[in-house]
Image 1: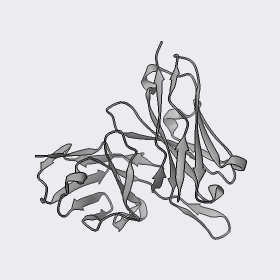
Image 2: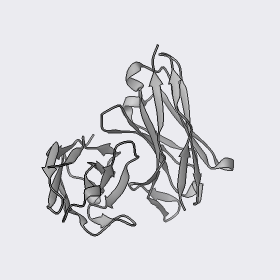
Image 3: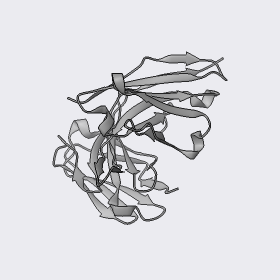
Length: 127
Length: 107
């Protein structure tokens, strides 16, 4: 069965960086894009970007351009999201979510919704 | 960027009643790339509907989605106690954006 297991909670000071991991199992890791979504306390869902685990290519939401880096290690089926220059309003639960899309034709990919989600990682930014 | 506006913000109903949740897009959502998620406190979102009207794996048939273009609806035909939660719509046709959510609470 598909599972996404994320790393544990983090407490960081303003200005620091945080790196969250998402270990995938139960499917071919390189066959599906991976999204990162965050949720501030009591707030809604905010899409941060995706990574193509096959090529390492990324697409970041404009809001996070220059501060977020998404990477992967295919040898251990793990995706990473690193957010730098943390501020107090970055305090949130960060989720990874597998994209339900698929490859077609000669290597093109059609993105879909997030069909499997990690359990979430709470990142607290506080001085 | 496509902005999604969900209404109402809060919906108060009783078990057994029918729930109708709305999601309106600021511009047309291509190919009906519209999804609905359910989120309960302390849990990750759960995919209910994709492609505007297709149920995800394991989702009961009391959940149904409809709509196209800029207007989409999630309907829960007969509310069960476990259906009271927050619901989000998401478009994935032009980048990815979420609505602000509708809280479905017990009346």
